[in-house]
Length: 94
Image 1 (tube, one colour):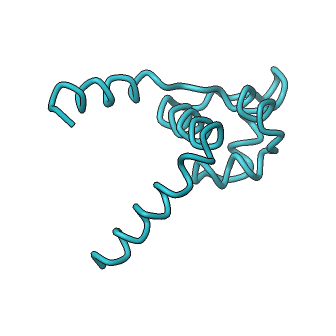
Image 2 (cartoon, helix red, strand yellow; image 1 turned 180 degrees about the horizontal axis):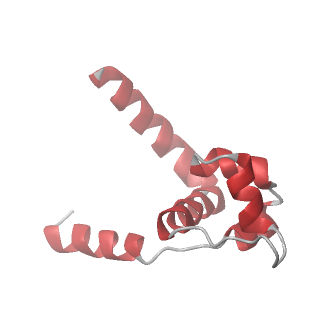
Image 3 (tube, rainbow, N blue to C red; image 1 turned 180 degrees about the vertical axis):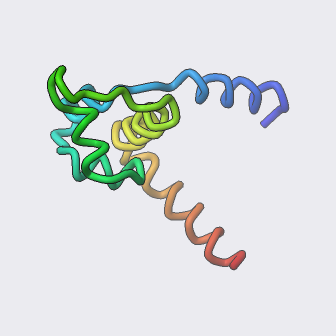
């Protein structure tokens, strides 16, 4: 991959954002599942999904995590072997 292609991939990554509501709707996941994906408490994820009174807006980093998770799930058939290969290479470096 050329330096220009790497830069373009990173630029596209930086524009990937997905709201918890959209992610939850697409994948049928509740606050507990979203909390596990984002590495936050269930309470925080619940506040992202509730109505107006106690609703909080997640930071861009969490919206990006959900966008990447959405991409991975959408492309799971192609991504699973690549992720398993990546995991094996990471484990062999330890």
